[in-house]
Length: 176
Length: 341
Image (cartoon, rainbow over all chains, first blue to last red):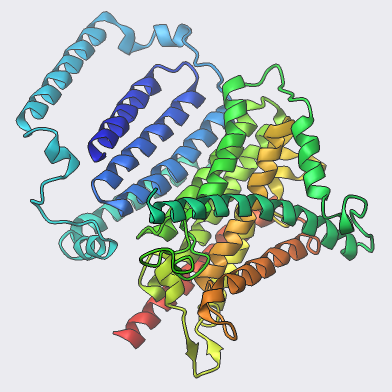
C-alpha cells in the first residue's frame, strides 16, 4: 500500500513540477506548483512525518503560493509574453544556451549517479529503522532548540534581513 | 464487511450529511433571525415557519441555467467552486463531536466520533482552511471580471492577514493542552475548577477565544469583515459571475466554513462535548448546543455591526489583533512554564 502511494505521490510531484515550466499561463504554473507541494506533503506522511507534511501545506501551499497568485493577479499577465524582449535576452544567445545544455546534462548525470549510490528505493520510503526518528512534534522542537539552535537562529536572522531589505527597496523616495 | 470499518464509513456519511443540513439550517436561521431583528417575519410560505425555504432555494439553484462568461477560463472557472466546497468539508474531518462509543456494544472496542484522529489534527484544520483561499482567488481570476478580481484580491489579502492571528490563537491552546490532537485537547478540558467552574479554556483564555473568533469571522468572510463580497462596491465580489450549481457550492462552502470555525472554537475553548448535568454518553448534545450558540453569535454579529472600511480592517488585523495574539501566546507560555513545571 505505502509502496503504491509512494509511486503515485512521486509521479504526481515530478509530473506537476515538470509541467510548471511548460505553462504559457503563469496562473497555471502557480497552481501546478501547489499540486506538487501537495504531493510532496503526501510523501512526508508516508515517511511518518505528519508534522512536516502539514507545515509544508500551511507554509508553502497555503501562504507563499497565495502570495505568488496575488502577484500574478496584480500583474494581470494572462499570457506570458514571448516577444521582443525575450528573444533579445542575453541568455538566448547560442553561447549561453550551450552552457545551459552542458549544465543540464551535468545535473542529470549527477542525479543518476546519486540514485545509483542509494541502496534501492526502500530506504527512501523509510522502511528501515536506522537513524533517529524525529517524527513527533515534541522531538522536532527539542532537536531544533538544542542541537540546531545556531542554524535555527541564524536562519531567522537571515529572513529578518531579507524582510528589512525588501521593505527598504519597496519604500518610495523621500518617505521616512 | 469489517464492523469497525463500517462504523467509520458511517461516521463519514453522518458528518457529510450533517454538514449539508447544517448549512441549509443556517440559511433558514440567518433569514429568520435577520427578519426578526428588522421587525419582519422572514420566510413563512414554504413549509412550517418557512422551514423548507433553504431546500426550495437549493432546488432553484440546481435547476437554473449554468452561465459562464465568454472571457472566463473554462477549467479554472469550474475548479474554483469545487476547491471551496471540498476544503470546507475536509476541514471538519479531524474534529471530534462526541466521546468514543461502541455503537451500543456492536464494536469490540470504542471508536472516536470523528472522521480521523490525527496527531497534528489542529494543524490539519488550519492547513485545509488556508487552502480554502484558493477557491476564492481562482474564481476571482478565472471569471475575468473586475468585480470578481477585486473581490479575490481583497479576500486573499484579508485571509493572509488574519491567518496569523488565527494561527497564534490556536497555538495558545496547543501550549496549554500540550497536544495538537483535537481529541486530546478536548479531553484536557474535562472536569471542573474548584468544583463548579467547567475546566474550559475559554475562562483562562478569554483573550485567545476572542482573538480566535474575530479572526475566524474574518477567515470565513462574514460581516463585519465581508469585504470580498461587499455589495455596494463589488456587486457580489468573487462570485459575481457565478450562477446555478457552481454558485450553490460557494454558498455551501461559506456556511460549512462557519460551522467548522464554530466547531473548532467549541473543541478548543468550550470543552467540546464535555459539559455539566448530562452523562458523558450524551456529549453530542452539548457539542451541538455549543456549536449552535456560536453559529447564532455569527448571525447576531452580522446583522448588528456595519462593515468596516478596508484600511480599518487591515489596521485592526496587523496592529491590534496580531500583537494581542502574540502577547497572549507569550504570557500563556510563561504561565504554563511557571505553574506546571
